[in-house]
Amino acid sequence: MTSREKLEELKRLRDRISNTQIKTEEELQKIKDRKKRWATYFRKNPAIYIEKRMGFHSFGYQNFSYDLMQQANQYIEVSTRGVGKSLRAIVFGAYRCLVYPGSKVGVTAVGNSQANENFLTAFMGELVFKYSWLMKWLYENKYITTRETDKGYNVTFWNGSTMTFFPCINSSRGLHFDVLIGEELRLIKKRDWSSIAMPMLVTRRAGFRNKEPYLERTDLDEDTKLICITSNRYKNEWFNTMFRDTYSNYFKNTGTKNRVLCIDIFSALRHGLRTVSWFLQQKKEMDELSFRMEILNETLGEVENAFYTREMFSRNQQLKKAFYPPTISQFMSGKDNNRKKRADEFRLISVDFAFSNGEDNDNTAICCIAFYPIGDIWIRNVEYMETHGGGNGDEALLKIRELFWDYEADYIVFDERNGGTVHYNSLTKEFIHPERPPNLWRKNGFTLSDENDLQCVSDSTLKDLRARTIDANAIPCLIPVQGTTVFNNDVYMDLSVRLRKGEIRFLIDRLDFERIMEEDKNSLIMTPKEKALKLIPYIQTSYLINEAVNLKSTWKSGLVSLSEGTKKKDKKDRVSALCYGNYIATKIINKHEVENGKDDFDISKYTQFVF
Image (tube, rainbow, N blue to C red):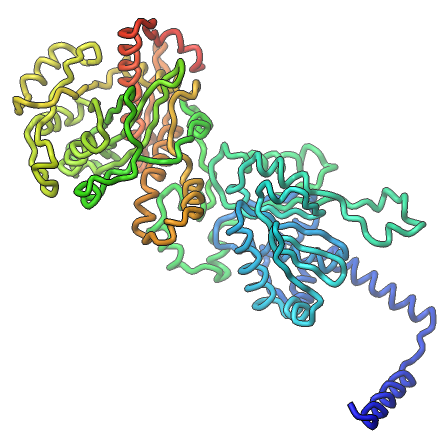
């Protein structure tokens, strides 16, 4: 800058100063009072500030949710996918940072990928650069700065407020916030939420509280704020318990400021956040249970008089790895990633055949169960399940034959009624596989197991079935069952005992498995079809549990019977296959224990655990 330019700049500064009116103390006080009133107004009306000042347009139900968040000390929202709940929570967090200087807002999620997504996509990509002109201006003019830390992403506001996006993991311990937002709470484990996230809440202390007149003004203390948002899931899950407690405390304890909110998919359709074609596509692609919970916002639990509860199953969902039948290429190469069979392990395939007329609500269910001793107890693993429509009998029989060899099974348990005898006849024949070559495939048929102490049907039935065997070299492995009143009572009771004692294990929840897949580098090269096939056993497990908890129990003469509902979608095929297989597993274990000099098992000793 030349001397002349410097002189001109000084003149402009002089003129600006001379033209500036010197405000009196009264005028300054008026300005200060107006700021206070506006601050108070915006704190009482967050939706107005978010819309008019931040420039973020919201619909009526969204404005209502902002008001509830502001009112509450604890706010829990269980809403359908598609209503923008994650972005809304982040918008409210930014609002708190702007209106309450010195605020510390934390947004936590289940893992690093989700926490990064919240910052990069929701906060930066949508709020800052797309929807809010104020946030964009503040960011571009350096009034808001961002940086990545070892614990997550940190946003610093010029007024001393901060907003941190972090995963709910052990390395995040030590952070502190006066507003904590839990994003997609259903994915976070309760122990992580209780031990990592909740201790982070501390009270905000405004700057003026450090001045002499306000140092000991306890009436000015602020409460911490907890905001939780999630999609729906099962009734027994911890976040739903938290939701119910928050709701009931609204009425029981008027001193607490608890608020809850639920929003359905039709609000999203009404306001154009989602389209009807999207809704129909989700219905087509998602499995029924996930669609009902995540899109229709249903909370799935058990029926009123259920014999089995969802908690009985969920606490036994411990298996992370399913059994996968090999593809034809894997079979030909002899390579698969399935667990190898132990020397002391038994495996069986349990089948509940569909009615031969192929009714809509009747499927052939095939269940793979492995069991082996660990210390003084036997552990049973339900590692795989699949179903076939009632009209696909040949397909089901082919799969049973394949699974017997692929799973290295020792027994095949099947329901001899409802067309079971017809299928038995087919299984006793030699079978030439249409794809597997003769040198890699045993064509032998199957026949009744020669271990008569494992059989559950009458001698006359056994004699008739043996006479029906066609292949002279058939493999003795079949164990037929018949669902009489007494027999059904015994199998239902035995499964209840195993569930309560933790002796039977199921595949983990589908969501938990999806998170494991996301963390696996190999999943990056998998096609959508391959990922979908990986999910099938876990989805089948969800259907199995849902069937079980929706069976209605009826007691007569001290015996229990379980029945499905009257709707076409109500089934109990998977439960029947599980119960049959579990009961025969008990008989096999008892036989093995007796042969090794241990006491026999008496189911009557354990019925006390059922009630």
